[in-house]
Length: 302
Image (tube, rainbow, N blue to C red):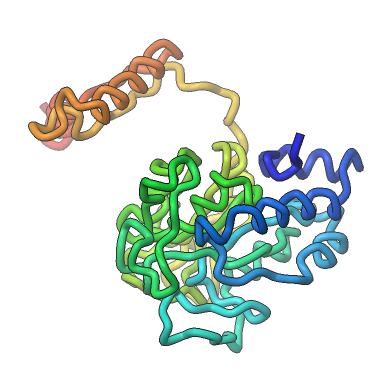
């Protein structure tokens, strides 16, 4: 088994139990990068000191795991370009709050990932350094603007990643690449040191191979930041709690499946099938038309 195929939680457990070493884990990650990056165009910069940094963090929460970071997070030790030639070679004078928290929690930035330039796009085709390909099928797009981070996870070129979302830029590429992405509530995660796309909307967030991995990563990056007045001062809960409770009695809304241009298509059918799986697990799923009615009923109290 190649160690780069591990989930974040699996990697942390094996590192702590000394079943694997950081050198072994990073060797497999770097082999995957060397093998695939030229064709997929995922990483714009790599940290040659990543293994050494990881070996210094065996007891931290993230145990020195290799994390990919979207190239709009300012990082003092690695270039930050936001995938724009205008910033080619730029080394920021300060670190973003999110990457500072990530590293304090024991995560190691293995490299910076490609994106739509300035986060203006949803396909990772507008990068000034060339488009990123979808590892599941290079003839298809990875989505965006966090397409490089989603593709890095799908290609096993890291164990988890960070992205940012203004209007779908985490969830959409995660979906297209077959991984998991979480867009936190605005203000839950600091925007300080993130190249802005829409300051009143931008939300940095975790991306991973599993929901559990994203919850674990969100634990490390969420919280109030005095450098960002829009962050919430509410305490950060443990997002990993309740992961095993299941979905029994939950109401799951399925939006747009009845849209005239989507109804009956493979995409719509796949969403409906997912709803049926929720139903089998004890939840109640509601298609868009019924969801609209329930929202109106709730709003008007009828």
